[in-house]
Image (cartoon, rainbow, N blue to C red; front, side, top):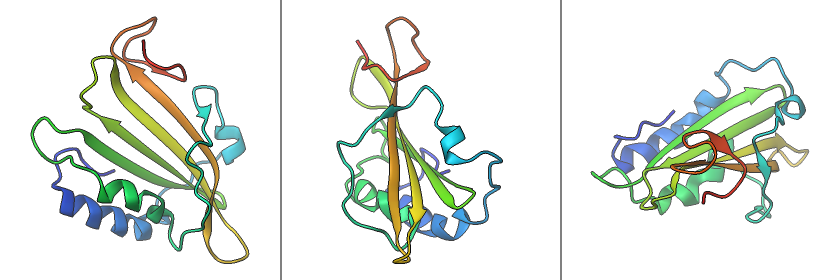
Length: 144
């Protein structure tokens, strides 16, 4: 996981280095299908139309444009884990200048295809709100 207080340059280096670590992570015992639990809203609005040489590259653009690492700026954490023949990537953005949204998580399931590239097979999103029916808990509903 990339810590919130890490300077931006180090975050990018850590994310790229996470490619090597992604395959050293402990694999979960369930398949991505079983991990498709309630709590993730399917999200195809940003479906990439290309493959990636390494799973962590899926976040490269987000990291290039990320302005965090400064006091009062948003935080970004990225986790990669191997689950069978897939890699599950979860990004968590927090500390946004929004009085209703505490954090947003995106979950991507990547699979290696016959072309040797990693493709996004599945994408989900969820929100943690400051207010609403269950403040501080993850939900698939937009924050009020």
